[in-house]
Amino acid sequence: MSLPLSRRYDARGLICPLPVLKARKLLSAMAPGEVLEITSDDPVARIDLPHFCTEAGHVHLGLTEDGTAQIHRIRRG
Image (spheres, one colour):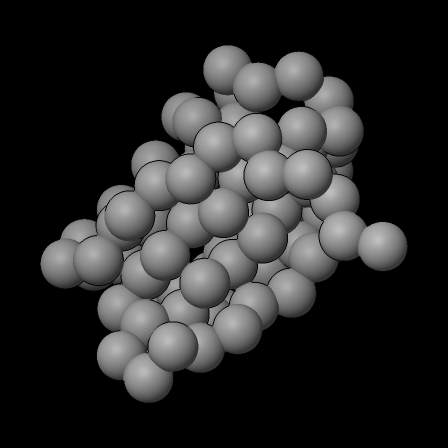
């Protein structure tokens, strides 16, 4: 069962640490349980976004790749 998507953000073109900073700002304005989908083409985001989620109490639901970018799904804690 997939969770409903609450918000989507395209962070392509942003390099570390900007994808994480954008995710932090967006998630802070969301209600617990809502899901953010953030798209990034920064290779470091593959490591940084899951780590940020663990540290901040959010749940990194996984990522998929569309060939040029990673699509991360994050449930706000």
